[in-house]
Image (cartoon, rainbow, N blue to C red; front, side, top):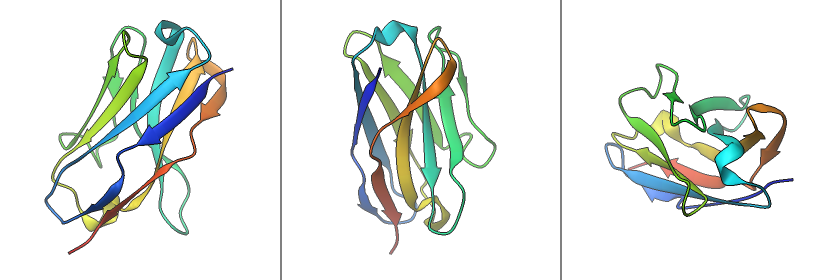
Length: 117
């Protein structure tokens, strides 16, 4: 089992920055592949970024160059630095974990990011 708790969401103006944090517990963090997903109202949940146990990262073109995922294994934390935010980035952001990179998925409760002037 893995317990995840996100924080750091809020209201930000277009072009601004925000950093999300996710605290993981309940398992050996160094075994977890971590990811961030988001879900906008009326849309499906989509992948934002992943980071493996070895630190390899992946993100879709929609956020590449603007969002950066990182992890601190000493603190059992994963982060999502979001820069140059756009209104279309508005969504609930969810932390995700997989033990060894395999299902099942573990999810946090989500944190809301609103990008608006």
